[in-house]
Image (cartoon, rainbow, N blue to C red; front, side, top):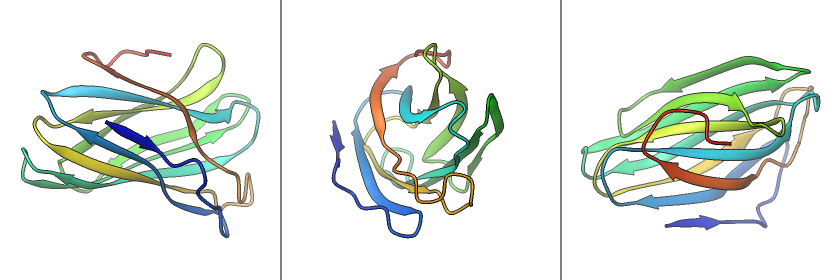
Length: 140
């Protein structure tokens, strides 16, 4: 179950709780297609925070990227093991997609976005599509 929160406000390059995800099931992958296209020259950090009940672990994961004329400086980081920032890739229509790997059983997390760098400062970040798959490939 996911809840898109379309009316979040960007204040000084920070968006809190712009998307929520609740999950129950086995190990799986989530692909979140952003509204950030290549060649928009936007530097972004997206973080997920929450709790994975089945894994008994907190969630704090992040994805960073720069939408230069190509996907530049893409990276991921995980502080806890409840959700894994599994990758960043470009969709077939040139939008940036982040991928997460979720632990099994009950989990819930929300997303924050940061565009505080001068390249893309105060950009409005959102997910235009989300899909759950059973593999780590590129879906979009």
